[in-house]
Image (tube, rainbow, N blue to C red; front, top):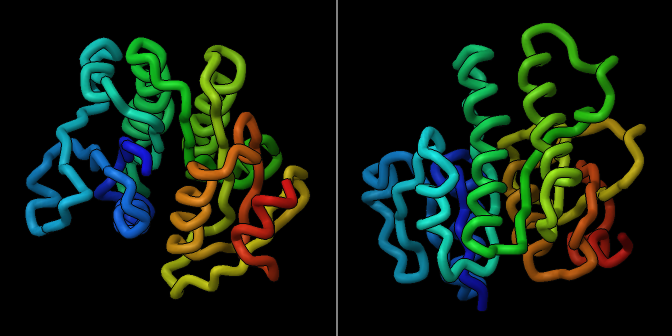
Length: 216
């Protein structure tokens, strides 16, 4: 059993993730800007926790004391402007990493995006999003000593979970993946040391999640 802070617990992946972790008997701090967003959630393993990404790292660190691992699954969403994307997907992520270091939490998993490393695929209105993800990933890898896992899913879909995925460390992949499968991979990664200090792309495929991770 682990004690895990999920930042962005009210997001589409985050909501699925906290349920999966709870079912595994992990203790989950569900980090949201407004705990009322999870008011209807009645689960003894899930504790709605106010976590405002506009706060300073030292303030955020207070919510991380005693935590075993952190998942950053927050995002500004597709309906906001580039300014909000930078404040949440980039600065919010970096502040969360800094807070983790202040609090002494070593394990940090972040949900990034496929093609983050390939600027030729940063097109149209998605460019600020990819830029934010790119620099957040770079900070995590190069400016911290955290035991990170960076998961870069393809196009997200709302189809039911398949429990069949393809995990690659190379960039030349393309495809989609269900949000439920992303959440399952995040949960499995938290409990598998093979994902420590690894970066991988994620799409739906033909391997079970555990086999795909163990083949890293």
